[in-house]
Amino acid sequence: MTEKESAILVSDKKYLNYPSGAKLAGRDPQEELKELANTAEIETADYITFDLSHPTANLFIGKGQAEKLRELCIKKNVGLIIFDRELSPTQQRNLEEIMQVKVMDRTQLILDIFAKHAKSKEGELQVELARMNYILTRLTGKGIELSRLGGGIGTRGPGEMQLEYDRRRIREHITRLKKKLDKISLHRELKRQKRKENAVPMIVLVGYTNSGKTTLINKLSSSNFEHGDKLFLTLDSVMRKIDLGNNQKAVLVDTVGFIKGLPHQLIESFKSTLEEVNYADILVHIIDSSSVDIKGNYKIVTDILKELDVSDKPIVTALNKEDIIDAGTKRDLKRLFPEGVFISAAKGTNVENLKLKLSQALKSKREMAKFSIPFDKMNIVSIIHEQGKIIKKEFTEAGIKITAEIPIALSKKLKRYKIKK
Ligand code: GDP
Ligand code: MG
Image (cartoon, rainbow, N blue to C red; front, side, top):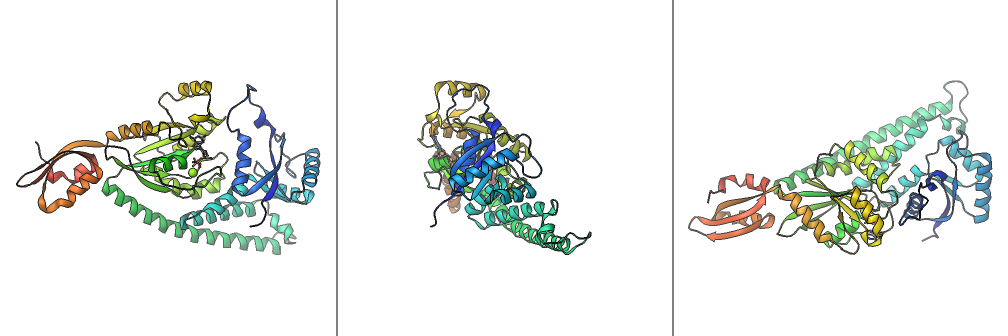
């Protein structure tokens, strides 16, 4: 392995101006860029904040700021600058020329991370799609490639033809990628259908990136996925079967991180991953209680949920990381989320309570029923056993009489074995 690349991060000064000026516990939004960089295996050599409220078309930052940044690059001997903003191709190229280092914007950084962490075929295709869309928007920009290719004389110089050609090729590639993704999506739909037949309810974890979704799924299912300070480790939906107690089984689904300023191209291409949300019986919204921008993060998640048109689904709110917040914060959160359950996914605190809440929320999807199962249909007994809670079991001449609390969907399927008493 080569040494970690290091970079100077540039963000907007206004993020610093918290109204209260109070010392805030936990992570602040600035930390997020550092974490993003870290996830992309880039070390933060230094951090600089500028007033970025008046970006210039050529350079994004002002002359004085550029000079300061250049000096910092030399002093720290770094070859990379990352902006916490989206740069136009012109701005990026001009900055690179002046600074004599590589310049990246937030979108590129996120694309880079997505590319590094995609594990499944679907994830890879989605990243590729996002990348192509990103390149396409840049090519459509102001035709920067023109000057690079030495064209631009007349209206249809060689550069412009090249540009047209590139655009067409990229569009064709995008079409191919979409087709491949459609196929995978169909495959997933079939699996989902199968699960529906089995009537195992689906619980989907949503929440701002780094809120603790993967940690919680690990805790609840005692499995061991990668999780950690790196953002976006969950690129592909991960599913695990869990037992909520009383033999109430559910499928838990982890989702891709929701993050502010997610490039539009990424949202589009990752929608299919978020599709799982549509099939959820319950959503668990996990909140990082230690974040200083809880409201902002909350809004980003709920906005995406709205966009997915699932706001009517039952949502259980879990206030995670309660182990590192103070009493005041806890009080505020209680006011904001009266129905929320405080947990520590990492420590396992109160996780049982959350399970109880989930099981209660699922109760409405279950019913008590009696069945008489003939002896030659013993597989049905095991299905009931698998998905329900058997209250009473009696052997009769006709077969086995079972009283059980089972998912309504399953109960409907077993209608012809149902008995009155
Ligand atoms: P995800 O992006 O929502 O999947 O978040 P992760 O599960 O990857 O967790 C992000 C970070 O928060 C990791 O460093 C976890 O160790 C940490 N974390 C998760 N849950 C807790 C918790 O209950 N308490 C504390 N202190 N840290 C937590
Ligand atoms: Mg995760």
